[in-house]
Amino acid sequence: MARKLGRRSWALLAFGVMTLGGLAAAGAVMAPNAAPSATAERPAQPVRVTPVAFDASARIARHTGTIRPRQEVALSFRLPGKITARDVEVGDRVTAGQVIARLDDADTLLELELAQAEATASAIDLNRARADAARAATLFADGHIPKATLDRATSGEAEAAARADRAARALALAQNRLDYTQLRAEVDGIVIATPGEAGQVVAAGQPIVAVALDGAADVVFQLPEQDRALIGQATARAELWGDAVGSYALTLRDISPDVDPAGRTYRVRMAITAPDDRAAFGRTVTVDLLLPAEAPTATLPLAAVLNDGSGAAVWRVDPTGARVDRIPVEIVSLTDRTARLRGALAEGDRVVSLGAYKIDPARPVRVVETAPTPEG
Image (cartoon, rainbow, N blue to C red; front, side):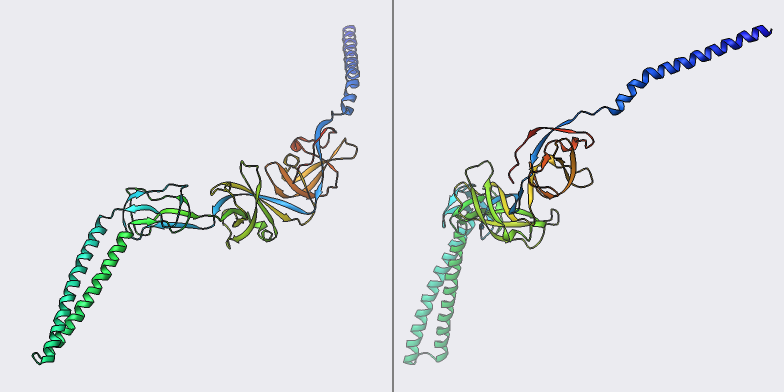
């Protein structure tokens, strides 16, 4: 029995030694691979950079506006009725006095005929009253009638004269009403709206045709609240959408006194200094305002700016070209492609200008392309 227990103890001891040896061998095999993985260099990130160039003179604010006539006239009939004809369409040129629409004049013609008949009858009564007054004056002078009879003849003449005058005025009013059935242009200009249509029954004063006066044109746009104080110092130009021939100089005409509660903007109207045929009413324009800058600013591609919740910033490449630093910046203005900003940057600093959100500051970078500085 003692011999069997001894054999079992030696077997367990041998198995333990073999197990420890296997674990040691496995550790020796794995240890050489673990050390290099902790010290391996991560690959450099390829980046495109743009040099920083400051402009301390001015900044550009860009807005979208519309060309509108400086003065618009809404033409309407002076009396109600049914429109029988409208002789103009949007875009037609009209001259002062030109007939542009008509009302049904059947009723006004009847009123005119009635007034003419009344005027004729009152004229006949006046002639008879004058003859009676003259005859009464002669008879009174000869002593054939009393003074009371002469007074009645004289007052009858005065009454007939008053009725004749009233009938003449009623005739003039009827003639005016007939004239009012024709709507005439009051100024030379271009038709910009035609809310009234043939066959429509309209009220007196309801707009039928809108005419814009020739010559003067304005650009109307919305100005952000933060630029309200600078607009008076700005130099403005307007460029037509889809037309690269040239731009128009603008001068400030007026600014709305109240801010729009929804967009926090002011309605601005600026006059086009020298409009031509290309500056048609209703065309869309881009308004560039050259505004005085408070401090030097730089223009960079919009893709160079990142904002992950801790404020706007850019990645500046260090002088060695191998690492990047996060530099906080202040955004002055934005367009669809560029950002105008200021911050702790120096003239000539290289900034990552594409894919700023994908940069890992813990990894090195490798400059593969240098893009030119965009125009402000």
